[in-house]
Length: 461
Image (cartoon, rainbow, N blue to C red):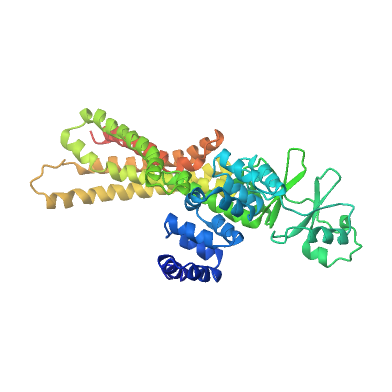
């Protein structure tokens, strides 16, 4: 696969030559997705040149396809007039996303310069939280009264926005409540005089404006539909969420979970600033770094209970026990968090998840414990051959048993944490993905070291 799209060198050549005619020619045959891909490699000045050379509709497509961090920089560099042209060419839901990145005063100024019909739709969307069904829905849909005929529905479709993707017509009652849908295929194959009430599909997939976007993704996936109707508190139809919206949300949620499991934050997606990105990472990394000092305190307070050579021998295996326990905990919590994200019913039930992961841990713990014991028994003779003059602790068998037993205990305690933390975080309304990264690792390290030292006191002394 090539390192860059063929468009980019042509685009760069036209920009460097400062040839407006050449730039226009290059852009004329390019797709919006390819132009957006090149924006990552252009500086702010060149991005502005490209946008100004594009027709408003194409510029709007490019802007909405950009990564959030790049889009934020591009929007900041545009004047009000240019930004108004771009926002006016966007579908209402995409326009709301762009305006949501501006200050309230800037957004209001752009809305004031737009046609009332457009600005009203966008303002309705801006009322909702961006991570809810209301925040990601489009207010453009085709709704027809249940008393209408196929001919009436076709007439409604002719008046709809031709750029909007349309899969089905919503059938509503006198109170604008959804009673069913009619797929386009059925509509065009039915006689014009046919009553819609006779061909509609009842029980459509419906979500509330306040439903979390992740829950919406799970619902649409579960019922395998192309779109879902969005209703307000009075159950009136106010919008719809289409399959392309679903893909965007699924990608965003997956990225957010990955960032948090890695010990950073989804806010890193929204910035191109090195210092801002460093701040986002450090606010997770530093608490974990200082949390690891607890392991040092555990070792310090347990030291007087051991002969110095025994203590030195035991400390050699602290990283192995801590890392294995931590990795085991991350494996379990990642599986559970993934289940939450995909809506798998078995993964969202604590007892069911505990039974499955607990059994797996009971298999893994003795295997790792025995292998750790054997590794320690082999380690000391190798170390003695390499360093014959070093005075090592003589009874390696006791150390090996302490390490093996501690390894088993560390994996079992990691399983407990890996299962309980995601469920606990979910219960109190905190994103469970947080539990799958630094928190599990830090807690497992501290607990496994404590268990190791306690077992060593009982076995090796």
